[in-house]
Image 1 (cartoon, rainbow, N blue to C red):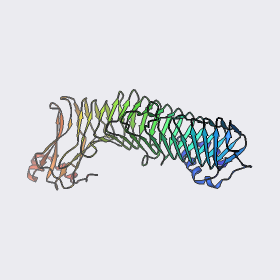
Image 2: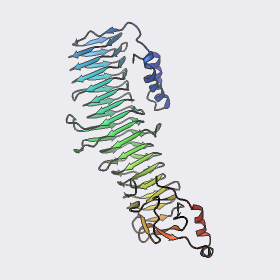
Image 3: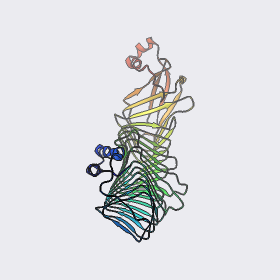
Image 4: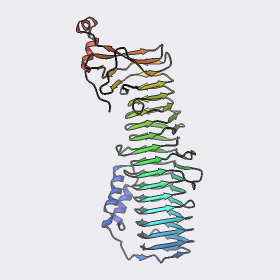
Length: 450
């Protein structure tokens, strides 16, 4: 890929990092059409090797292995630097105020990249434990960036490639991880005090962010800004958490957010809101504020230590399984409690605080399994007396070819809500009982387990 023309770069800057489809479309266009542009002016090969520094004010290229030692390769505001070869920078720096297009490789050994201009990487960059990457301009990565120390963003940063962080990724401004972009936060022996994301700005994830498991507990995310997971592309975005996340700001989920067993999401005055997608909570969510599930699904085998408002779907377990909420559980009129029952187990939710019910109970029976008459499933456990309301609708209430139905027992004094399998009365009995059982005929269907 050759250097991108100034017309395309100008369009990108006008759209860049506004967290809109304009931003995303323009940046993907750069990746697709960049090869149609050529270098303007008279490009000159860098006079390699470089010792003691070099300043570029015009147009320079590198297509060979070039040593840069004990000085700064300075690309000024009027300079254009394109690299197809390898820049091996040792105890020095690459300072960019103009435009740098890296399509080859950049190796940093106790050296830094400082960018206040426009930096495009479609090749590879490796930075050792003594090297930093600072951005206060526009930095677009479509290649691979590996950092043993720190990537610090105070400008606009966009990732459509792969970023591997072994110590720290700090975002103080705008960072977009695009569809098919990957950010992996993992620990290594060179990590200084752990591997982490520190976000004080706006981090929008449309691709994949993985907080890898570390047995020593050194990987984590600290958020004091906004983390937006999947707002534009919920079908492809994912945030996988296998360590602690300390949230003092805002986390919004509309895609896939997975908290693994042993991991934790800690709302320490921050907020967690889900408008769609899925939160898989096999770990712990500690929250001093209300967990607001406005849409999508909450599932898993973990626990929420706090209060939750359910306007989406509550689905205990990863299949049939148990989930715990130590605070209050409030299900809104739009909320759904998805209850899965199979031949060996069933979903169960245990709530330590007040339970307020509304919305729908959706009963999912395993294909081919019909519980015997008299079978009881206590699927919602709570403190005695801590129950308000009932489900306003029940899906799949009749089963076994219309011969059985579910009776719901709201036992306030005992502290549970249960299903009991009963026989559908004979027609003569139905007439005596009135229309209550007749209404069950409208639900003579079974939805198979997904």
